[in-house]
Length: 407
Image 1 (cartoon, rainbow, N blue to C red):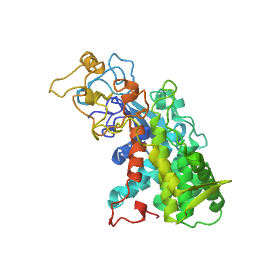
Image 2 (cartoon, rainbow, N blue to C red):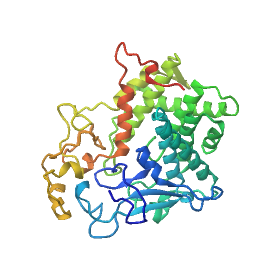
Image 3 (spheres, rainbow, N blue to C red):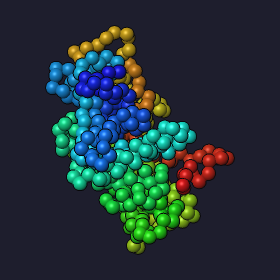
Image 4 (cartoon, rainbow, N blue to C red):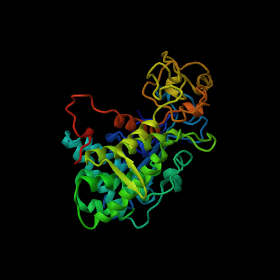
């Protein structure tokens, strides 16, 4: 409840969500809209970006004996300093793009609450202008004060796709060609790469709206790219099981989940257009084959549920602070926490909402291995989207158009 107070007087960074097993708030992937509004501090003079700030992270490794990476403690028991990372907007281009996308989509979801929706979209507009106006753009993880704490976990590789991503979502909220111009000038979907998702959004705009010159050629190029991707997914119907050497990467299953979501989304677009198939050179894929691939990516051969608490079989020892320590009314210190960090017992407090981030489908899945059982928001996002997309409206439902708002 004191986040922000240790760094700057009257700075309120209370709220948001913890990233994964730890108590760190890595704000680049946070979607709590009211919390996101706190992250951006507009400059006093709108003609310059020198004083525009974005707060990028709360907590981390502050080199003290106790911190969020070394201390296994319930969030309610935290009593150590929680540092705040702050960025100048010119050194956090991709971070700005993520925030723009998040608050733009939130304004769409919350459009019935006109005051909040308007505040969100106005903030997104201002942030997009400032982020694109600065001559020197950059990645936030290259600056120690801004993204040094996040570099180990979210070492961003580029910023242009995030700026496009944010601009496109703001366009879908506003429908102004100026916003689309900003987005289209910058040109495997996950937290670090929005290229495929950008092509899906541009294809959606081309299919369901007619904006004319000069955007048509750009949209056609994006649609061709998506068609090629769908062909690669569905060719010969030998679908990937997403198996990979776990020593080379973490959270591999998130890529299968996001691929599933985007494939089902594109399949729905084709159905709405009454387009039975699309062609890539001499190969033809149908909306049905796209949906089949999408389903294959979220089926578990081990008959184990991805979501903790779902079905009869699911992992019961999630690598997560809040789930692993019993709630008995006692204040715990860091040394106490190690007994639960290293415990082989089931979690005393199930994390019902968590999805495990690694290869649950793989035959060598180990339910007691933290590598396989750590949840994260980045992984949860793709799976939730895929499951919602694959869940067709019930028979007789008043929900039309496959649940897709073409506008």
